[in-house]
Image 1 (spheres, helix red, strand yellow):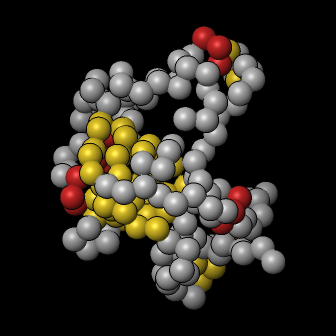
Image 2: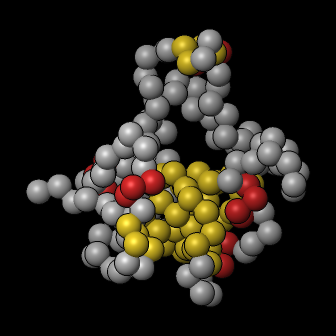
Length: 160
C-alpha cells in the first residue's frame, strides 16, 4: 500500500493548491531531506541527499551557523508527527561555496557533512544524475562539470 503525503496546516488541507499534480509517496522522493536548528527544531532549509555522509543545500542556510547547531532529517513526510521512518543526524561540517557572497544568489550552494552516515532504504536514498549526456534548455550536460564547489565534482553526472 502506498503512503500518501498530505500537506496540512491544522485542519485545512493544502491539496487543492497543487495544480495538475497528484499525491506522492515518501518512496517517490527518498533523496529529500531538511535542516533544522538543534536548539528548537526550527525548520531552516530543504536539502538533497548526495551520499550517506553529504547533503546539498543553499549556502545562505548554513554560512552563519556552527555545525553542532544543525541537524539533518531524512525519511520524514510529515513534521507534525513521528512516523518511525525518520533519521536525524547532527552536522559535522558546514561548507558553503567559497565564492558565495551573502545577499547574492550566485554560488548559493553548500554541503553539509554528517557526523554519522544515513542508512539507505526505500525512504532514504541519494539522488542520482543522468548517466547519458542529454541537453536541457539547449545546454549540453557534457559541457557541465556539475560543480558543487572546488573540492567536489560530479564529472560524469552519474551517482555521487
